Length: 117
Image (tube, rainbow, N blue to C red):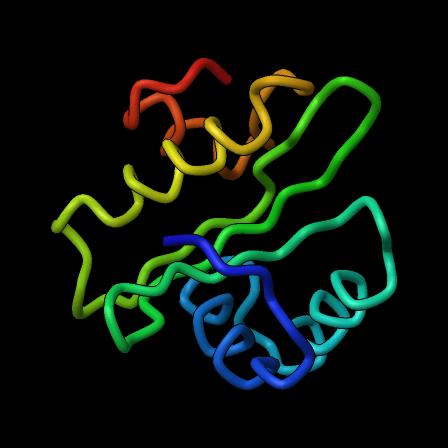
C-alpha cells in the first residue's frame, strides 16, 4: 500500500531513492528530498508491505498531468511485482483528475507495467 512520505521517514526515502541510477550522490538526494518537502506539487509516497517499506514513487503535478518522475524498489525485493503494484496504485490515485504519464527516465518502466506514458 502507498503511504504518504513524512519528514520522519527521510532516511528511508533517501535510501530507496538512492537505488535509482541518476540519484546516487548524497547532495543530489538531499536536494531531491528537500524539493519533495517544500514543493506542494511534488508528492512522494512509500510502498509498505506489511511491516517493511520496500519502494518509493515520486509524482509531480503539472496541470492535468501526474508525472511519475521517480520510482524505486529495494533491490532484494525486485522481480516480485512491487513496481507494478506501485504504478497501479498511482494510476488509481491520480487517474480521476489527472493523466498519469512519465519522465524520460521512468517511461520505459511505466510502459512495461502496462501504463500509458
